[in-house]
Image (cartoon, rainbow, N blue to C red; front, side):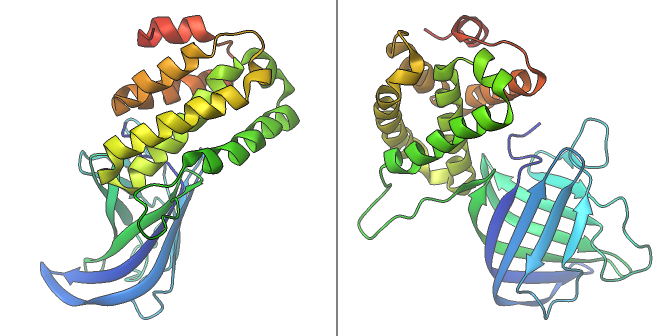
Length: 268
């Protein structure tokens, strides 16, 4: 399953196209926001600022799963609305989230009676709970140290507050690495051109963050998490597999530590 599947997002659209019978029947600029809120039961989409378009502005879709109507189709994620109203020309039957590589390119909603689709083009400004970084004039990428450090502290506080067992079984270094990889993958989902420069900047800042969080790590070596992070983000497929494994263990209460990660992902 593609890493983009079943994730929350915010997408700002500046252009739309409406198609029916293989023909574009309307198009133009728009200032609309599409939000998706995902949980284990559904993915809820809402469209704000498209009042003049003939479509329902919100619907709940089944999450992508093996053998379900919602699926990863290779170039797009297909979310199916199992509760659509048959005969309602405005109800949303299917939502397609198109992607190139690991980046969302545009979003399409399909209606029926008669068959009609509306496509929204723009950019993703938030993915999986992580916002697109603000880049000032003359800046390629900002320092991620400031972006990460406060969120990472909040991440630890949340673990301590909501699940005291998790903080006891999870290697703090892994928590730091996993949190920063989640940010890295979210930025890839928002900007496909960021690969090299973003990876270098993130690695530099994460190394500094790990050092600043040394008291949480006890007497463990600081070199290992930096190496893990560098190797994982050098291959996004490996990074995605790591994230799936890490959060599965976390959510099911399994003990994970550095040795397991090293053996499973062949890290130094």
